[in-house]
Image (cartoon, rainbow, N blue to C red; front, side):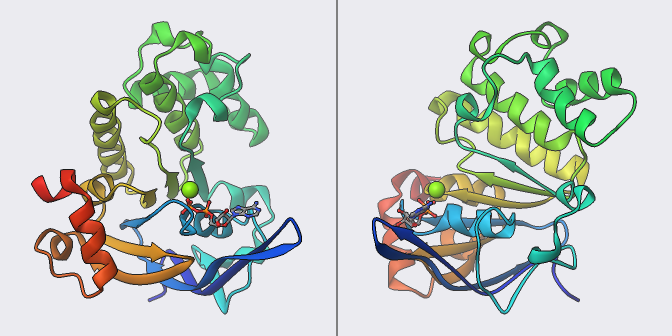
Length: 252
Ligand code: ADP
Ligand code: MG
């Protein structure tokens, strides 16, 4: 059976100041329906670019790149865009500063012509643990964690089967990171979401994901299970180095 997300021999090149950057070089993996898949690696290893290629946000080459059975190149229709939503690192940058949480959540409902907007907005806020009093606040009137909750609510309000999370807790205080990770874990279960979570932090990825791809220099080093990582059973030297460097993870 084909996976919910299929990536085969994916390549992404950028041209930057007259040079070609091979950001992603022959990456392949498959994510099953309902799975949470992690991608970990140093800054610049190509993690975000893989997510963007899956979402069709950057041009790419591959032998196969499909989401829910649809090839990436064909995903142009509005309905296809509802399949998959993104949550980014910095909710402050990704939320419009002059829109209240209500307006931010209303926009996708308008674009996609959904009814019962007020009820859907109230439910979405409740689902991410926000109170009615947060509904008409602007991003600067919310804490970092609350802003990321609004960004997650916006991603889920169209009920997509797939959520792509790019460093969703990296911009947050350490004390808030676990809260948001637990929220994502709960939402994943309640909504049977398929998730790809990208982070430079092994601990974050191992908290949420059962299989984890290790990336280095645009290439996929290996795919390991969280259990293999914890027991130090990774194949590649690079993965073992990454685990050793991540003290928080080895303590956990
Ligand atoms: P990561 O998310 O793992 O930190 P990225 O996927 O953002 O890595 O970047 C991978 C490589 O591609 C880096 O060398 C980065 O500088 C380069 N890159 C990413 N986006 C662009 C772009 N739009 N133009 C030129 N180079 C880019
Ligand atoms: Mg990145």
